[in-house]
Length: 316
Image 1 (cartoon, one colour):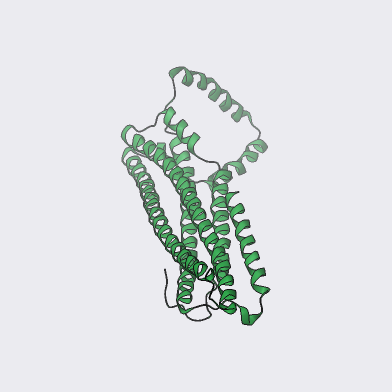
Image 2 (cartoon, rainbow, N blue to C red; image 1 turned 60 degrees about the vertical axis):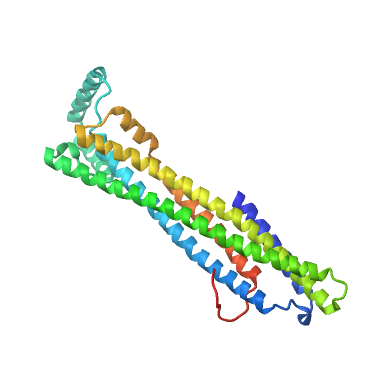
């Protein structure tokens, strides 16, 4: 909702600025000085750079979500068979049920047995996994270590991505502040000149237009900082959540490697921390939606910065 509110405000600012500009005859349009042209080119190139970062960051985060979903899904199937019973009584109670089910299964008609086959086949297709219990001791150790190493590598990449988020946040914050300070200095200078009594009517008209547009640009870049920080905070929170889930499964594999089984409580934690398929889908949707809204905001920046139609000579 915060993104939508900011986006609506940005559109309103742009619309108002555009209407004001269209009311003026062409010969009274804002005269852009060489200094302001350079600033506009620099700002325009900076927005293009941010667009590239946004796309790269979005693709990376969606990829991590996919990897965590795949890793946790396979781990749940593999580790479930290694869960030790909560108590001896639980085992005794389960035994009669298992015997009864086995007896009923033996009495089942061929048609009934045939009916259950597709369900089993579908389960295998959805999430194939190695049966750890069926492996020899050496094969078991090797398989568990390999799975643990894969998760450890994924955890490492997620951690590196957080460092990347922090670096980009600091970089974007500095650049946005630089743009804002340059605009504010130009706005204050034009405003002071406009207040002078000995300027011509043409200069007064030019400075009126200039200060109005500079005010709109300042509003845009102040809003941009808020949007940037919101993106950073949301992506950081989501990545920390993914890391926490991966770490819990890593602990389960470490316990399995050391003891050949995992505790019921740890398996319970894994189940509780493992999002559903719908939850992973919602994560991807959230990432893409936030990226799209910020992209629209950056596109407004292209229009507000009004770069001259020539090759950009500087970037931020």
